[in-house]
Image (cartoon, rainbow, N blue to C red; front, side, top):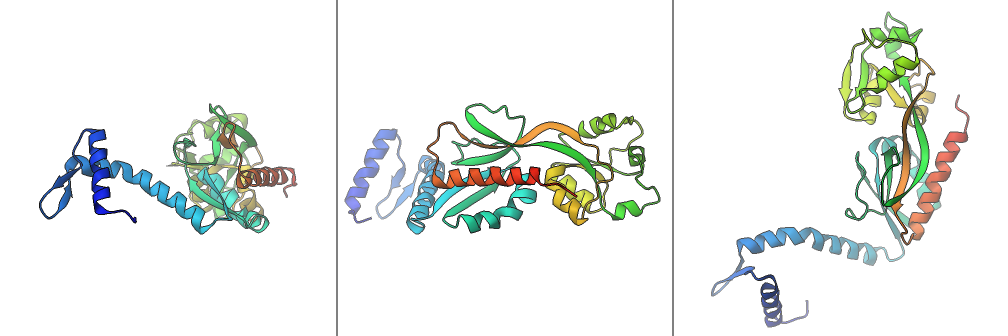
Length: 273
């Protein structure tokens, strides 16, 4: 650090006087942290590591624009990752640092620049841009259709396990209701914690799930998933791109926002076979 040991000792004493506690236990030949000092080190270590990471980002990539993004898992796996190579080809000077979260994160507290949220769009103190409204359709595997009970009408679903998202158990009853089918007599089948897991379970022949039609369209078009009935349930929710209000938008944030919106609009406008 290019400073003398006595200067370090002096600064530590100043810090201890400021805090009103002893951080170190001083013996004749060694210095040890006190219990309070140990606790203080643990508390500030995360902040110091954050400073170190931020410094390394700038010094190692001085010309690279970094954007930290939190993304809902289903959107990340089924929509964003398959398209990321297009963004990287178009903007090689922007590095995306992505984490996955089922819950909206505090953009300021978690040092996050932007986020893709799933919900009603009623978040306060942030700017949100609607990406698209989510409609749900039943999906299953081809293998499931080889059962002795073909899916000729929604009523035939009673012969199969229905895969539910545990926090949204109302979705299947609502879909059956708009299909003019009584929910009584239907097995709950299987409950999973996320839409991503529910859709994966359907693909693995575990039952029939309600899936986001937009996110599942590549698997439906490729035949990995079958959509036995083209009856849509409006989930009353949507995916949104969010960022703090009145931020100083960096180049990376701006081009990522423009790219995501363009890609979503292209998906929605393209006819599906």
